[in-house]
Image (tube, rainbow, N blue to C red):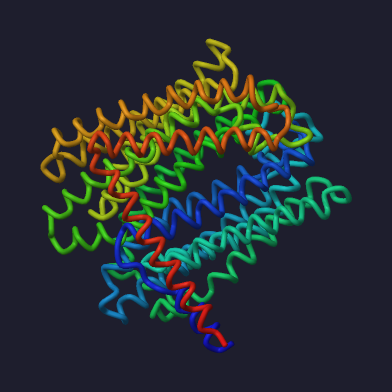
Length: 542
């Protein structure tokens, strides 16, 4: 038993040595977490109508603003480069990281206090289309989330940052799975008695468990926490990085709040349609784009700080092609299979056909952004490796301005339905990524443009062939073979078409000599390595 415990601890706290192995770990656990996350959405759609879910999802808006400001705005991207820079001097590391954590925690509790007492007038402003009873419910649940969920969520992400800085990804990637499982259990067990309060309390309990699971990362980080705040050089560098990033995230949160406001002015359930379509679009973006961005930051930071510019340029070019090789076909599949995907993930008893169709249409417009949205997370990490958060800031603020302008125009001038907000997002993320690519190319003296264009043309052509064949296969199976009024047959349909699409895509990619197809072999080899380690640990337990 002692050997089992030691082996499991060593596996969970082991360091990854390459971007491929780190991405594999993060992507695998994100897939598992996402599956449980969408199981959570399906359970919610089975127990509550889309009008009721408007209340539930809207209740997260204010807590999400605080979370995104402190985590996405401060810790997630700025924490790791500072940690790596000072990790060779333990005294400096302890002082700098402790000061960052203490100031962040102080700001967190001040924001919670202010928002708790101002929620009664803020929420009616951002949900003008909700009735009085709906608004009171949103206020009540928002206050619970502010006090119960937010502290645990922020502190658990501090521990995640420590793990990422030490290239320890397994335990912090597994914790969200427990979070989703607890919400599912709470909804199934208590929603009949406590209605929407059941999943809200499940969110609070899940956040607490997610924090507790990651405490071992604190003890394995070789960092000693101190109850101090010192305005050191490292802290000043941190805030030089953070301020532009904070403004960027704030602008994005204003944009997200405007989306909520606009959807409340549409027919009831519109925010749920928008929210669920956006979550589904984020599935491949999280698995590929966010995981790659998280995993790559420590490596590209080290390479850049060691002044290996040629190696840095090579990593950037290869990473861009690898991301597009995986995400362009994913976007294509999400477009051709949009309705079955929505039915499989959200087709609960109370999620009617009208909601399914609206969500599927909205998803198809969101899906167009999958490749560039995934690329965005990697490109911003490149600038954070330079300790430059101003460039992503300017690009994001400009593109968010475009998003807001388009959203307002589509709804108030052209009177388009909820899917127009997805078009606005796709246009804005496209502008954002093109700006970042242009600035990055200038920073590293250009990309290998001929290689990029040549490989991309082949990827688009191969994707078109695979999508064309798979689309007609899906139509034939749906109309003649499978009765897709039953959920199990929808799952069979997606499994058959999905496997066919990906098999055909990878075969054609290999046939056309697309270099990135070799990456799949590397992933398989790394997966076999981790499988071998797990078997060795548990097979030797007496």
